Image (cartoon, rainbow, N blue to C red):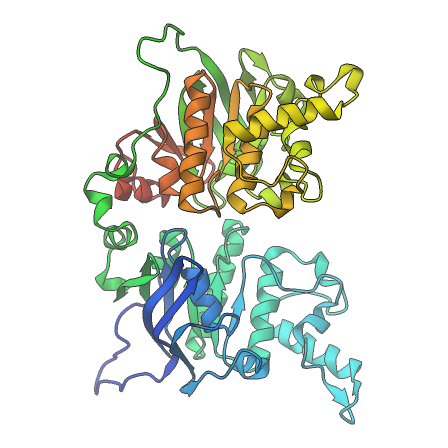
Length: 523
């Protein structure tokens, strides 16, 4: 279902330029020491379907926030439908001109489908009371136009991901906007659902609706978009028709010149492993064989030796996080075996993984990691209760001693061992999580985006902690698609649609790894 691409001209007299729906003019935005956007200028004409691409941290989310009136730029101007944007408080102005369908749905699950469609715009009687009969009739007409057989009176919490996306798009159109931003809309959709969504997008394009489409999947943007804007390090590095910019050029723009001149070795290189001359033999620690998670992971097999650091990379939905959750016992796979140190793990059991000496640092330290109201000492030592006193009784003095040694070793900055961990900086919280996972001396350490959301100094400190662990023989699995995190690995496995597509040794080049992650080509 290839969308026609080109300059919009047909036979006969050339058409005039399409009216501009959205413009960012010299937009800059800084958050503390981080320059998120730097003099970004983008012009999107009516009826276009513009792809917005870039690596993590390129500035895509910040630009979306500015375009939707959620973030105020430090400099520059936003124009929508030809009008200069007002302040952030004039929400009605913004809602009439732009809407964003986020990866995380904004549909209110406790409200009905009809109530969600007319959120903040319910039909009323005498301008006061909601006209529920009119709301249901209008909602039914909207859903009929979309070909959706959904009861408008049912709770929106019962909708599928695809249906929630359609409800959000329909709601935006009802509010009057003809410019819709789609943020990773296919991340949780199956193939048939993606095809249906694309068909509806094409139909709306023909009716004059303009889309800004954000996706990590380059194959998708070539199917549904006509043009592309590439961001790198907060700056626009390319604005072009997709007809004139093949995938390889898009990837080159995303990673920059360093992607073809030195790659990983040009930045950091693999972490130092065991000291030269150390007599400990390489021995397999982790063995994954035929791992399968229905609909996500299919027949994944790999291993990690003692002291080896392996990266597991892939797009959102590639299956990489499901693999890591299967290893640490958070997810029960549908098939395959996982062994650590020669002992098979019990599927879907966190306790089994811990007993087999598997350490784990989750991606979201706030949701799955720290206990913010407990002390730093309590957070650091919760994986080693047997060292804190007899018969499971925690002796405060022993706990303070253990925590003190760990704080010194990890170089954690805190007022005391009793300071609530939630009061620490993000970098110090992350150090504590890594230290807690290492405290029981694990054979295997699974790290999911281990340096996400920390400053440069903390990132380097965390890599130092990881290097020290592997020098003692700990096997490391880093699950990430952040190129800086992957550069410290001895090798990187790339997952694409639930299967291992490629393997790269240390020294890979950025553009080649990104191409494999995108599923464009394997080495």
